[in-house]
Amino acid sequence: MKIDDLLKQPSEWLKGAGPDAGIVISSRMRLARNIKGFTFSDWADDKTREAVKDLCKRQIASSNFMKNALYAEMDKISPVDNLLLLERHLISREHLNNPSGKAVFVSEKEIISVMINEEDHLRIQVLQSGLNLISAWDILKALEKDLEAKLDFAYSEQLGYLTACPTNVGTGMRASVMFHLPAVVMTRQIKDILEAISKLGLTVRGFFGEGTEAIGNFFQVSNQVTLGHREADIISNLERVVKQLIAQEENSRKFLIAKKREQLEDRIFRAYATLKNAHVINSEETLELLSLLRLGVETDIIKDVKISSLNEIFIIIQPAHLQKMRNKKFSSQERDIERAKLIRNVLGGNTKNV
Amino acid sequence: MLCDICHKNEAMIHITEIVNDEARELHVCQQCADAESMHMNQGFGIADLVSGMVGFPGEAREAKEKDLKCPTCGMAYSDFRKLGRLGCSECYEAFKSVLIPLLKNIHGSIHHTGKEPEKMVASFEKEYTGKKINVVTKEVKIAELREKLQRAVQTEQYEEAAVLRDRIKELEKNKI
Ligand SMILES: [Zn+2]
Ligand SMILES: [Zn+2]
Image: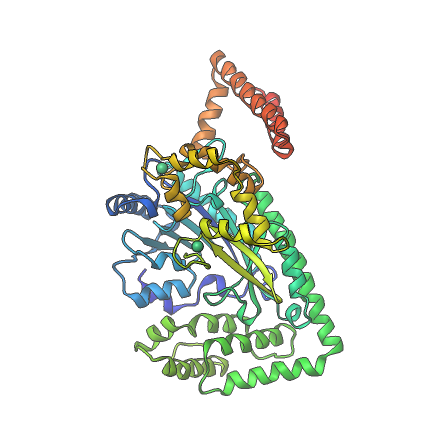
């Protein structure tokens, strides 16, 4: 697979299927692993990083999970291709810095990605649509088992898997769920909820943008603690909280529909009209309006739009995607025009790349 | 990731705070965290979190930490404080005296209870399914765990004690 092939189909994890798909966009499981006997990536010299990359590359490429996979070395591909991988959540922002020795494997349907020489030698992640932590974990476990047979991971009996940052040691596992909580935000309960979550050993952050704010009411919740708990317990703890959040969001939607229907419909239809008709639109406004439209689709107020189309818009409105799809470098002003065009196109019923 | 306060050092402490209805993530380096926790009053989230993390009272202890160096990768403890990341897996041993309290603070535990590498499980099982000598190995293992358990109880780490107790029980139950 080549990088340009990614543009030919939406990522599997954005297909809008799976349990609770809608309020929950996607689930992600990640393992951090290091190879015994090699200096950790950030402290290693270029020679060591190269050696780690070559070793991992050979072993990962021969895995059954990586048939037809994409393999890219960050210092050999163009900046826009680097950004494209970031926009598709296949690599981290950190993976763009200091690219020497850094590489990534992406499985055919973009379910699995393995970053080499990120903060740890290996960052193995599995993405699934909807609330699907357990199936993501099953895939991840199987892949890890496969790699473990060929690579010696740094492990201590007391501390578990050893990672570059002490915050990941132990299981090296991070489970995250990406959410859309517009009704909870509209009914002004988000503050209390976020406060409660952060007391449960979980971290909450905005999903879009570089910063910390939650543009478009999209949040990501993940476990903070990696040492002293079994993987299954960490996952079920997160899942329990996620289910409460879903219930809270559902109740808030019911409340809005029962008590504020006119106001709610007004906001949703205005958002839909703007997206369908705008000729210049920046990404932040897009995300805010998409949030409302998404709420409209899920509450059956809007009937002629599919969640998968909305998911697709999220990805293709980003700068590297626009540039690659149009095969042209845009100024930010031009980008706002191209973005509006693309959105009009998707919402007009045509989901093909134009 | 750079520190949100000084924008120079690598951030090693990551905190989610709620400010005006919004969850804000704060990434700070060890030095700034130290400085902040010193002149910050109670009631501010980061202060509680961080003061516990960096609270190693006594200057003698401070001085000793500064001399720590990993013999395998050459990372000095001061490098770790600056980068927020360890240099190699042996650093965990080299910086043990300061890392263990840090881990206890971050995770509330210093014992891994999750999955082990398959290879290890396999060799462990082999040990037990073998002959006489392996019974001894198991006894040694249990004795080791008992010692850990005792230490955990003495230091009032009851959660870990419970985990260790369960592991011992499991091992004892385990028919060879
Ligand atoms: Zn700083
Ligand atoms: Zn070291």
